Length: 158
Image (tube, rainbow, N blue to C red; front, side, top):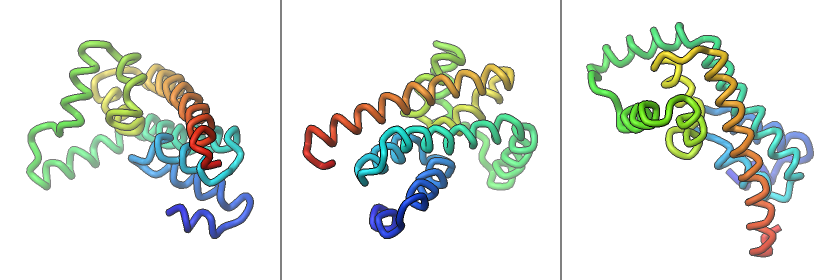
């Protein structure tokens, strides 16, 4: 993946990072360190990573009902009746800490996209889910950007 991004020039590297950030299950945990390691502008990488990841949260938030129906049909067709380990873990966090707790630990445990879907399915309102996911994603993006810059700088990789 790194070679693929390195072969492109200029703005196309940022476009690829945006697409990667928008891909389900690829959070800022991958995109931000990757962009910083490639020597791209850390501020731009952080903004691009946030924007791509938050776009998916928005889409899942606005189209939750349709997505939920599709997911239920798919699970029923496959004969899946029990929740996955990720869903069980998210439910435990939800019951213990509520939406803020789930949103703040989601990027590291289940991903912001899945956490948004789960929070909505647990009964949270769409505006609260989107707001808390935005706060969480912003905090994680800042932490990862700063950590990547200083970490790679310390190891003399950038």
